[in-house]
Image (cartoon, rainbow, N blue to C red; front, top):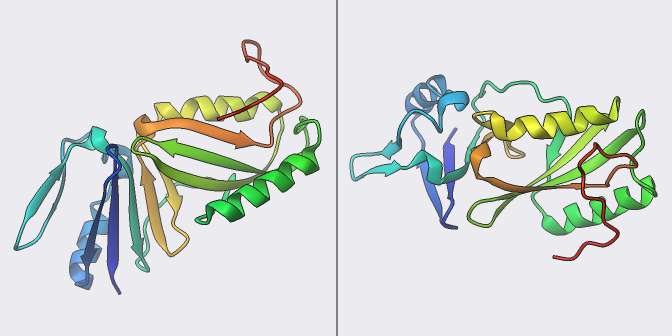
Amino acid sequence: MNLEIKIYLSDGQTAHFTQTDPKQIQASLEHLRPASLFDDGPLIVGDAERCIFFAPERVSRIDLITTFPISQPETPAWRRIIEDPNLFEVNALAAIAAAEDGVQPGTKYTGYVRFELAGGHLLLIEIERQLLPQTQFFTNMHRIPQAPAMVLEHPAGGAIVVNTKNILVAHCRPGFSDFPRGTWLVSDYRS
């Protein structure tokens, strides 16, 4: 049983680390506090050869890949992480076609959220929920940047901890039939 750690930085780099000692893995995971991970000073990773300090504001995402259990808050709307961008795009386009004029309040739907993180990193999420009431989705999206971190189950086991302050864009598809006041309604999108 190993612990693979991937730290995605806001400058586009990714640092990779591995721990193979079960006692060290257990100790590291017992002290993991996602809510304070990006607020308690530098993130420190080390071994007998080196000690590395990461400025928490420069960390966009941390993947903790392991078969050891990691305590995670319940996020019932998140269905799964999709790692293949092509599969994500195909599924998102199918969801847009199924929703025709946008998801209507009261409708159960599958949606796709593309989080663009500082450094060019992506987090592709499939959600499944019933849109009741419609403003609930927007309220939940407004709360994400206010949270200290977002924790999701990693597809290979373990967890993904996202520094919400480094989420640049959340692109949600399909869209909705009704939007809150103040939304800029458009008829075309290009990027």
